Image 1 (spheres, rainbow, N blue to C red):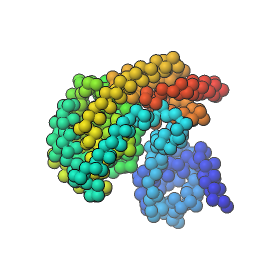
Image 2 (spheres, one colour):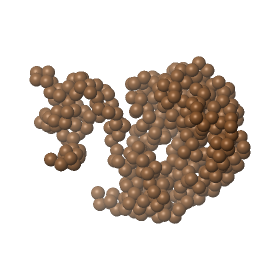
Image 3 (cartoon, rainbow, N blue to C red):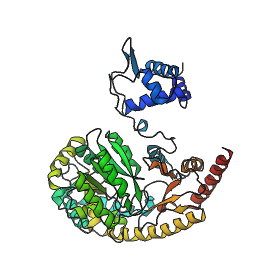
Image 4 (cartoon, rainbow, N blue to C red):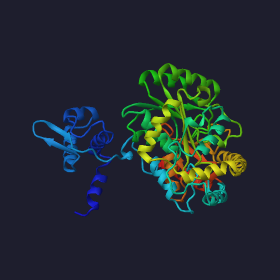
Length: 478
């Protein structure tokens, strides 16, 4: 049998009742709810749980035995094989078509060539970023005899940059001295360290629904249980939020309070105060991802500012505003958490990029970054207006008008499925971001997220229109 034939046989099984049983068991094993050596639910139990026939379960179990996933012990039943399979995030969470899977979306956007348009990606075009300034800073750092180009960084990170970050955080009302700031290799690294520090496998974490899709992927990698809270134009639905605190007793809540991803909304002060009061009453820790802070002309309310870094951990980076290639982020947290966070940082990465930190610091202090932000905000404001106008012509409804930033969350007309739109548009080399990529409850079927900085080509709207027409025809035939 050829190497591809077993794979083809597995693919033919998917979508059948036998495939449903096999998929259910594989997902339990992948998520570690069934550990190596654990007894698999009996044929009778699985039959009742999934509403299938006994013969269906028997066939599914026989196939899983043949594939080495489970083993049969005479007189005892079926058991998970001795070693857990490698972690596969695609096997966790809701089952999605590969065209709308968040990790696939990220890969498609990152691997796409220059001919592919990416209105669904989460970053700005390179031409909008200060590449010349980054090159100048690199040369300046290389020439500076005081710059270390060969040694590991200070465990906290470059002191001069932490001092600068303390000043910048203060502009948003967040009082964080340099001793309470730890540098990281980007915002994802910062969130990963916080999760390593605060979470145990099986802990519950609240996230917004919808939210930045990589929150979900990272939390699943940490074996967390994810509970979504509906997001409104002024913040999370506090009635549902409080109910989730009571029912699930979560350890963390992860959010963007300013320029929310994907909706572009901004947290209202009254919602922020009530949220923090609830967090205090229920022992909840809030992780505030403030990666979009520098997109704002006027600072919106910050949970970390209201809270004083008591229950709130603030994280951020320069990947969106300066350079995705210069991976530099930070964690600002309560004083007693800094040393254990540094220990975890040393254990997992042995520090962060000293060279990158030096480049970022130079760009902050020589005026390059300030000038770039002024230009970038003006471009984004123009692009926001134009994108919203074009989406309106196309028949989409914008969920809320963002105060700043690069994201627009819009609803498709006529109950169209955003996954179908994304699937059709791929054929035209246009990558859209369908709503359910961002929704843990899969309740955003009719929404798309648009990155206004990537929507300045007519082909984006032409592809959108054709995809909507094609999806409508398919829907009518069905």
